[in-house]
Length: 192
Image (cartoon, rainbow, N blue to C red; front, side, top):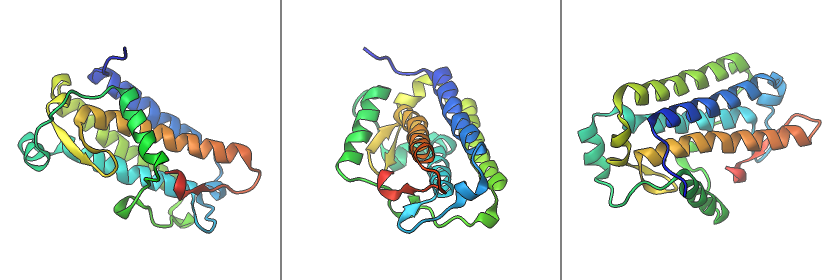
């Protein structure tokens, strides 16, 4: 039986996932990062998607708790484990769910620059981690919920799990494509 991550594990696993994405993308040439084929996301767009989703995931941790409760209500069940949450997410993806609306990144121009794009990613992830570190205690993660576009209302502990897993999910897509081709790489938006 898997137990829920505590606050220390949430922070360390999230930080590790964020760092792995940053480190891998730092090894890629800019032309690979920004290559934009028809009908597919560039690697830069995947990073931008993660910036958008991680910034959005930070909101419930940054808002006053009474606002979080007013917006989403109270949890009616215990938090899922990481494995249970990932299984639910994979089931949604298998049934055709994908990014929509504001979570679909616009084309990212190479003029943005690799360094600036990755710096934006690092700023967003730093804010996410510091907000959790400073404002939340371990027990509170199970006492509040937030809406998620694919998973419905999830506890804030589950949102932490999702954010870490979602980063690794996109990193694995990026790696699969960059390791199997000898040309500039892209990722299908269907793989989100």
